[in-house]
Image (cartoon, rainbow, N blue to C red; front, side):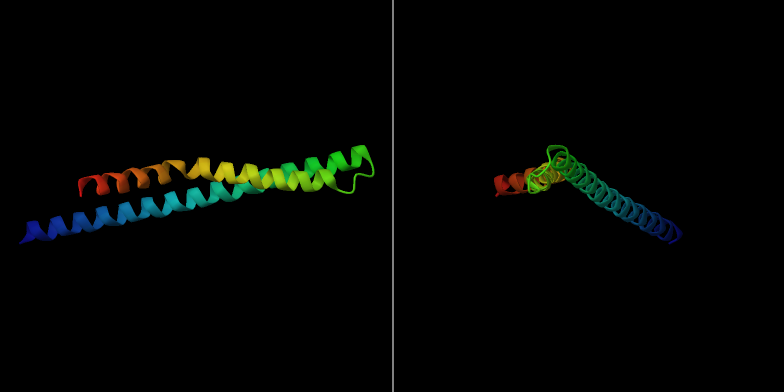
Length: 100
């Protein structure tokens, strides 16, 4: 009976470790996404403001272009960061469909 208790404690500890790893992985991913989107947006918007000031009366065209480019680049960056997760899920779903 003591062996069973020992095994259940080990399995519970392993479950806790796995859960902690998953939580830390999720926090890391969210942090990466947030920081990368903020840096990309700030960079392109700053460049747009700089170009508007450099060329004079441009009616904030470069600011709008910088904002639009930041959205496009951020979407690409988010996809690039999430692709390993998305690809893994696609492969799992594909294999499940193939087995049926």
